[in-house]
Length: 126
Image (cartoon, rainbow, N blue to C red):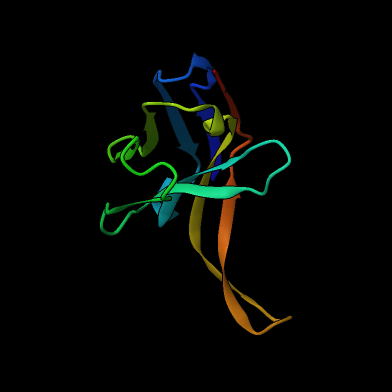
């Protein structure tokens, strides 16, 4: 599975921007898709996720009420609509997917098979 993000760019504070994530390969194996972001000097954080089994969205507190995650099930494209953008939203946004689990013999646990996109930069000017 490969993931390609698009839609990033420069926007003024208070504006809107939409991101897309297009998967390719064995897309039927995808169980969960989500958006993450990493601001300069900060750790990568979860923005929103969407379970394939239920399509129920989950948002981080920092974006709740402003961002909307959705998925085109026919094309498996993941979207993130971002409204009321703030300078604190400036970051590289990554698309993430899980396609099952594998058993880690090192610590005897099951872990997700994770796939990351290369990211798209969103810059919000104040």
